[in-house]
Image (cartoon, rainbow, N blue to C red; front, side, top):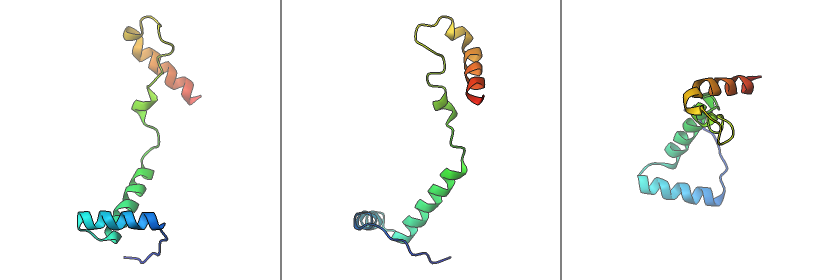
Amino acid sequence: MTRVQVLLTEEQDRRLEELARRLRRSKASLVREGVECLLQTQKRPRRDTLLNLIGQAGPVGRRNISRRHDEVLALAERRRNL
């Protein structure tokens, strides 16, 4: 392992200490877990494809969306990638 010095606010240190005590773990192990979580999150694509579908069908009241949903969403994706 590599030693790293990190400066935390007093509030962050207090909360980390409480969490470590409650979980019966060291503060260092919690910091390592937090760093790993951040690194894993950054590896993944930032786009959430399910959330990108929200609102892609267009204005409320359009007809035939339930039958044409694949076509409508494919068109919206093409527009977004232009």
